[in-house]
Image (cartoon, rainbow, N blue to C red; front, side, top):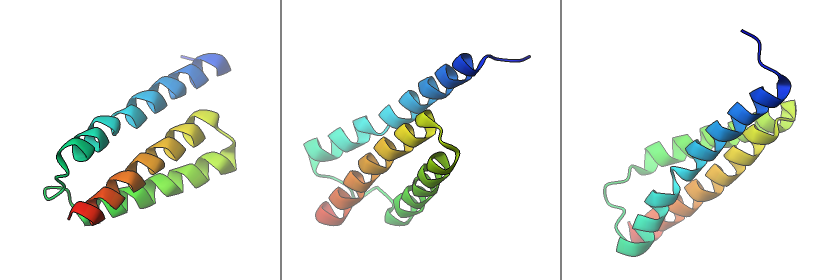
Length: 88
């Protein structure tokens, strides 16, 4: 089954939106409770590294959904990591 380029970008955009916004509740919860004890620093560092590589990949292939999703996700993850380091 072939999809048009627009359909493909819309699917990518929807996936990007969902996977990016999923980090917002975690960040808001940390800001509200100031509790990060149950978050694994190693896991979040590894995930941030992977998201950073996806961002580079998106830049290399010129895919706006990949670039946008990973840039916003990386910002949210870096925010969560900074809160983890601050609140322990």
